[in-house]
Length: 358
Image 1 (cartoon, rainbow, N blue to C red):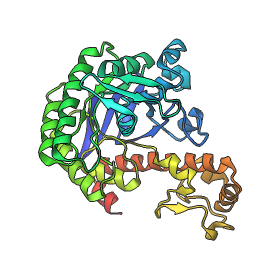
Image 2 (cartoon, rainbow, N blue to C red):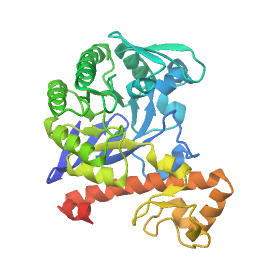
Image 3 (cartoon, rainbow, N blue to C red):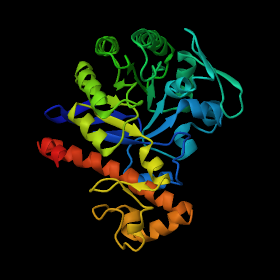
């Protein structure tokens, strides 16, 4: 169940009820692709920094350790020791990114594991079976994510097959305690986006996702298609913009009526030495930080910022010490979690536009 508590323009402050807890929206959802967060961040760390929803990936978990093993060990929540909501991607994006290793048919996708070359096959039915088996709270329909820059006919074919696969996903879903989100596709063509939004909206789902964006296009293009698509999805259901997660992206999406976001960027940035601050993104490798006694961000109260200086983190990073990546990952994730929290408060106080401009 989704309840909108307040609106400020198109920005929405809501609550999304799942089996494993209530999610306060707008929300940044952390990505733990293989049931773990890169950068040595534990589930205990995630709880301490206020993570509401943890994401994992159907494709990766199906390959390793295998969904049957996860089910045997009590499901994904128990497997990774996480008692809050979990969202699983269908695996569609990962499969379709293996352009030279997969073959697409109406039945599904045959692909080779890039690590060992073994053949695998995922269909809408198999994707549903995997996601239901591992027990995520929010599961995604198996879709065809058309590549950036594709022609109109390719985009249309991918959208129409996504719609047919969605109908198969709905038939294959037997669990009553999991929320299935259809995914709106249509690449970068206005009429296809409208058509896809109308199709998925005709299905009474728990929530709806906007897919196929943040795949190489510029910010202006992405914002155009979010602004076009979001209002066409049901007003009283959560809207999820997939794979998007810079502070600017969160602001742009919330302004256009999006409720849920996810991205691997916080930990990826940390591994490459980048960290978020209230003054913008910075790079710990820069020489200016070699003797800087300040925390990564003076407005942050994460474990890293309360206990360590930029100078210390730069020293660790330059020495190749993994502790630097772990500490900066904790900071970056919390920064986006807190950023979404501040946006929620701004909406409640009818000052989101001010917050956006600030």
